[in-house]
Amino acid sequence: AQSVTQLGSHVSVSEGALVLLRCNYSSSVPPYLFWYVQYPNQGLQLLLKYTSAATLVKGINGFEAEFKKSETSFHLTKPSAHMSDAAEYFCAVSPGGYNKLIFGAGTRLAVHP
Amino acid sequence: GAGVSQSPSNKVTEKGKDVELRCDPISGHTALYWYRQSLGQGLEFLIYFQGNSAPDKSGLPSDRFSAERTGGSVSTLTIQRTQQEDSAVYLCASSARQGETDTQYFGPGTRLTVL
Image (cartoon, chains in turn yellow, purple):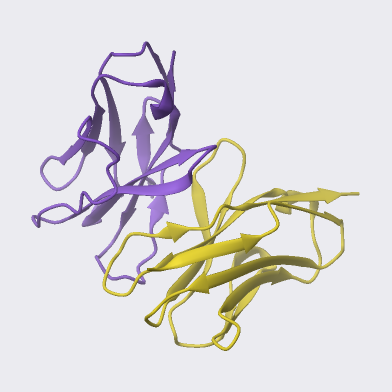
């Protein structure tokens, strides 16, 4: 069965610092992987997705993620954090042949001045 | 263009009452999903509709939960005899096709509180 683990339920960084949010997956078939962001009282917005075309995926708002099969990881990074990046981030996997998303528990990112 | 809309945005009900939650997907999207977001369980898949095919109901937590999609567009999630553990944010999403890599676009959710 497919699953997603996000290490760290809360991450705090300074404005301008590197953002690194960790995601590891478990899948018996090649996975499709997604990062979503949720701002307070809003729905989820897609940041980026991995669909096997390229291992380094660039998304919106300066975020990117690298698919590493050997490490079963899909970590999300951004070189320089902005205050507006404060939100909850969810990693998700789409099991092969199905459309439902299986989400990780989420990581709440705080950005302080 | 218009995104996924959900109504009501908030619903407070008493234990034992039935509730209906509505989702209007993006026009032209053939696939529609319901998820539940709660403190204890995180984000969980509930049900998935694709065109005229039989829905995937594998995520519904009990037979008190049901959903329908009329005319391939609007969907209603119904919870009968609500319980306190049903309190959660119910999210609807739609995608243009049923491909497993297709982006799911989420609505703002309905926050359900069962007293």
